[in-house]
Length: 321
Image 1 (cartoon, rainbow, N blue to C red):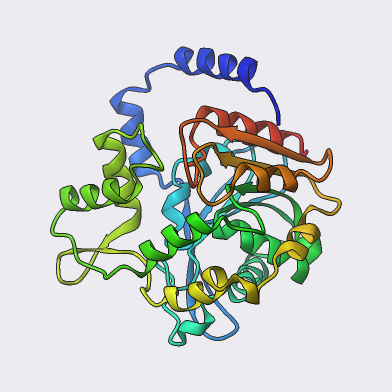
Image 2: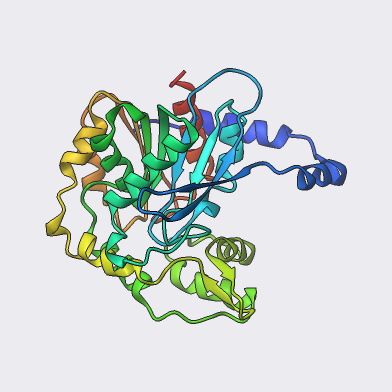
């Protein structure tokens, strides 16, 4: 683990010194898109979506691919991707099949890690990306592990957000129950925010009403009926159960060993996490190339906007040339 006390003080001073951009700059930013919509086809014929954040003008650097969690989508990186792009790195954020703007799979049994990994490979081929740094939130981190076995040369290094090859049973059960619960439409954003707060209050104990609204806007989308619906195919639960709750069928330890072999890894863990326990996180630090950072007052999974996380990610990316 690294001590971030001095870096946090630097971050606070820099944040306090930032000028107020004012409404005129805000207006310009709203008119200028900070990402481009990209569409690509998988090898089995699904139309898929990704956000493509161009790198700030400067150094020519490897791009970053951000992979979201089980029931989430590219909205999870809407605050993270722009500041990574400002570090002169192109940032690609796909929606996995059955999430966000990507098409649902007609066969629910295709909702598993190896399919998602192959979809990422199709995306890289479509965009001409030969090597990248990966950031994997929760399930996205598991996809990164699998990718290292399918195309090792693709991954320069990786950031794993609150995930390891072995999931804690309590967290598995919670996520499974959340993904499998009977879906109900929300009439308005207030109801959606209340629902999210009820489900995640132990994960983010310090969240404000504004935080819950922001969270809700990331995971709900308006349907044709005018109501708000969770932005994922409810059938993802079918394969998810066989992957995690019935995890004996999948041994991801070799996949993590593959990812960590000869690569720099940044492991981020929420101190309150019920998915990646402290003992498992300790086991994952297998060499000096694996750095672990714990984020205070957060469960599974950190948003990566926390000062501790942002500093650790920035330092890690800068160390990758």
